[in-house]
Length: 310
Ligand SMILES: [Zn+2]
Image (cartoon, rainbow, N blue to C red; front, side, top):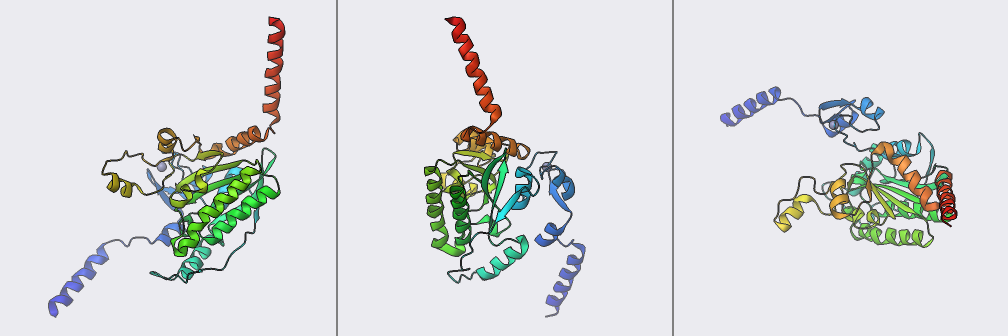
């Protein structure tokens, strides 16, 4: 047995020389994060709306950071959404689903992966929703479905547009069919929104995949996306193995989906989201005085031209 002990001791010695790798929590609690040029201070990144000034990478942000950036600091009111009973299937895999939920709630301070709020843009009242990818990968279960339906209902009741910022891995498999049925439930809710002639704008952020892309993520009247965001249904490796073809390096980025597939109307940088969403809503709801006066001006000009011609 001696040689085993000797080998173990050598192993221990080697371990001492190797640097301990930081855990996920260490990385999250650190003041630093990494990007193209190595470590970046989170504070510096935050000043630039969590966008890398060197490579333009749009880093992932949570719901409140999203609302602060798009609608202005604290210029929104968060709405309480209904929370159904946790863990309807008593799911246990490597750890119980209830524990996963508890951990996610402690980590994000949210009840579910979606936050719904009411706010304003260009003086237009609207209801908005955002995903937090840190909450079990932004996956959609019963609670998230309820939150989305609550948000859409709030928009319909108050005759407001609904703006959704997605960041989701898809449906939550710990809730199996109950999670999958949220795709149909939310789609029906969105249909109701459209039946009321209210605009539904989706902003796809990194990453949007699976059932979210396959349902309400692609149903927007206008679909925007942040630069470089992953927009996919199945993963690249799965597709590559199925079609047995080499796929381009930018496959499933928002730019690719916009240019090659036409599923995205426009890729917009984070700093421009407020302005672009504002002008689109103004046009859709015919509420922007600038645009209206512009169209009046043109019609005046047209009249003059017609008069001159006659
Ligand atoms: Zn970078």
